[in-house]
Length: 264
Ligand code: ADP
Image (tube, rainbow, N blue to C red):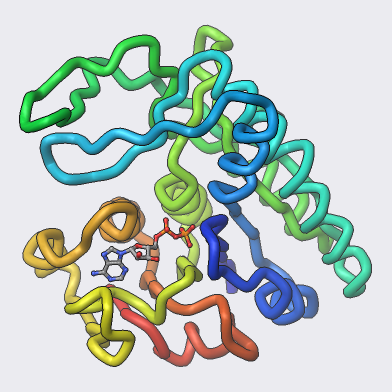
């Protein structure tokens, strides 16, 4: 079974149980972000993170060239090697890759992003972010077929060779789609999509594919990206997407058992 697991990088995520559950599995690709580490490093380097909200309500990281450098440093210099070292300690054979290797993740820079500031819609200038349009699935299969565990993170690259930041949930969806994965697990700091974000018991247990749109208004901030990622993965033939908690014992097994929000 080909499985793609994405772990969140925001505060409240628990990486250790995910890695412990992943280490013994074959056929799994791990995708990660690292927003908390990017924020921390940016603060330390005097380039604090900035976010903007699009007219549709989605929150995105603003990535000018200085902040892009921070993303690159934090993900490929800190978060990825830490995960790789830990998986190695757990007996797996991890291979750390960013979207630039291969290149594994390629796509266009985002054109014409808009942000809402004080009720006004403004154009976002000098932003180096984009989307993944092509995944080098051959590179991943080469590793999977030989028992390695690919550990993948943004950034991605444009066909012109420019480094772009990409959303890691949507990158995971593109990876799962390219591999025709049976399941994509989006493990995060909440137990799933919540009807009321302040109430962990308000989890939506199941969303049929055709009803995803109807749930977009419920999902605020970055949760919306996960629903968009789920939509993209299912459209590419992924069997099911589960949004579930990373901070539990055996989070992968639990998510595969349907403990979370199952979208199919
Ligand atoms: P990660 O780094 O794990 O990908 P994010 O911070 O990107 O996590 O996304 C998860 C966050 O989305 C939650 O911590 C929560 O604050 C926010 N969120 C907004 N609306 C919802 C909702 N309806 N249900 C669950 N989480 C929500």
